[in-house]
Image (cartoon, rainbow, N blue to C red; front, side, top):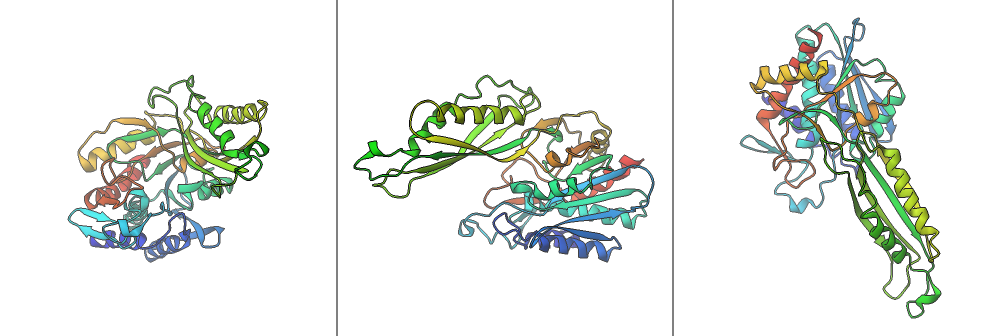
Amino acid sequence: MSEDLDFLKALIRIDSSTANGNETSVAKVIQAKLAENGIDSKLVNYAPGRDSLVADLNPDAPGPILGFTGHEDVVNPGDPAKWDHDPFEPYEDGDKLYGRGTADMKSGLAGLVLALIRLKKAGFPHHVRLLATVGEEYGAYGAKQLTEEGYADDLSALLVGEGGDKTIKTGHGGSYNYRIISHGKSVHSSQPSKGINAIQKLADFITEERHLFDDAPEYPALGPFVHTITIINGGKQINTIPDYAELRGNARPTPVFLNDEVTKRLQGLAEKLSNDGRPGTLEFKLIHSFIPVNDNPDSKAVNDLDAAIEAVRGVKLTREFTNGATDASEFVKSPTKFDIVWYGPTSDGPEKAHQLNEFVSIKRYEAAIDIYETFAKNYFA
């Protein structure tokens, strides 16, 4: 399986982190690999250095179209000095392959590409479309663009090559990022009464936000509604009253507490505090809003993936609706409704995505290729 592992390593060596962009380099490596095996593909440009890729196996075949999708970008590695090895130079240690993106999700993306090639070599006659996207980790820009351009409109099912291999993911919650800006008036700190401290107004918001969603309904598979303030910035000089401060937060919408309701409450709180008679104003800005992808635990795609996993790994996995968000939140905005299922070659153990010394099991990666290929055959059987 060294050729399959070498392909994954080639993807990991490309710094396609959110700070760097550079997904075009990933797309071109994939494009070359597909071309070597007689599969045409095209790049879909989002921005300079940022290209998604679309490839169709048997594009003229009649019948349903099965989609494979994975993203080309990875999260920033942080301080490379804190890694045991260079995050963009894959390091093999026994069954573990280390590097940024090994778990999230270049192993899944590579597995989908290689499964498509295997299907081609086996003379598989049905239509499978690969959608490799830019910007999933911050904005799902590629999936949004591909959806708007109609690449999901004729799909009958979609396999997302991430989500872990301990359970079959049958749906997931949303992800919602927002920003609150506090406007005040700057003066010297010796005369604070003549200014408006933007930090104080922001602190009022933080205090009330803590209980803003206490009555939000629970979705049984996820538990309480999740919301967190994650970034706070304000002030530039210790002896100056700050006229500007801001925070950023994340919430996780569910099928019973949707994105519009989150906006309503956050925006309402900002307006309430702006008009409470105390100095200063707050401004709400929506950054990203990814909708939940509803649970469908007994779809054909789920059952066919279940059978593929059992055939390859000899295990029967439970089915789970989970938190977290993927490109599926954009693809489901297509006017065509289709089944979606998730499976990736990583567990929820220490190799979990976005951490230092991220790694993937080589055996699980190799098994995922087999599972993706078998799933496609099951789906069209």
